[in-house]
Length: 388
Ligand SMILES: *Cc1c(COP(=O)(O)O)cnc(C)c1O
Image (cartoon, rainbow, N blue to C red):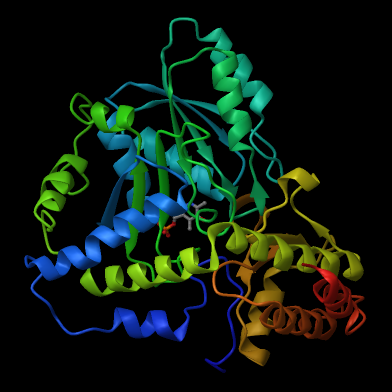
């Protein structure tokens, strides 16, 4: 086993050494102005990464799942109706959370491998003339299937139906690595976490609320205490939290945001597209196929790769770890055993990616798949040599 290899799971992602150092800091008084010097740059940096001028940013000690709960409990009341597509493990879990909170969930069953069916959303919203649907929930990037959905298209469907529902977007595996436009898409709540595009350990739920969603917190009646954004807002006004903030992680986030904004958010997005395109060239060269069924749905942060019928894709992940000390992602839920995943988000270069592709080739050949060593690597190399 080696701890020196980059990992290729779609989160947590590789941590730059400087970010690790930033998380490792002495204790400070979290009620002193010193903490404000960490908190406020984090809030401003997240707002920039979301491409928003005015989103209310909240950072909870939690994970992306806590971000989902923050979203629901601050905006909705028991029995409220929400609309969502189930097209992978993460949308499936968000649906489960809605149901356990007593919401009335209208689920649009969607093949795993497809993106959100925006036409079906439009039909459902147009049919809802009484505006019973209070929120449309969208998983921007289904990390289980490597499928990116069209959030601008979801917004378009809502506008075409002239529907006033909130738009809540799970951007946990897209924000900070793929194009995300909070203001332009009129997103009401965006959810992310620290351990994906932000290159940190798990431990922070990061959310952005529109004015409309923020106001809803004053009337929504789902129970909440820890995740009440109003308590958080009061705390922020005094450079503090309603409880003890995770100072080290936030110090790391401050640096992560500086790094992302210094590279330029659009350059970060372009780097992810370039690296992902190289991976897709490799997959083609191997003669394998993505779980994502159409090019416009291909994710730039994770590729879920189908293996031949009768082959257990999980064996690839097991052998990569045992023999080569390298981590890939297993298939989840409906695609368990049918796909393995290569995560390619966060702190990553073309050269790092080639090491992952080269290892995947060795593993697949070891396991008897018909793979020519170097074929995928060469295809990616050709692309990386010329890709801008
Ligand atoms: C990782 C992830 C989450 C949240 O997972 P946590 O383990 O709670 O951080 C939610 N949605 C998507 C799309 C994800 O990739």
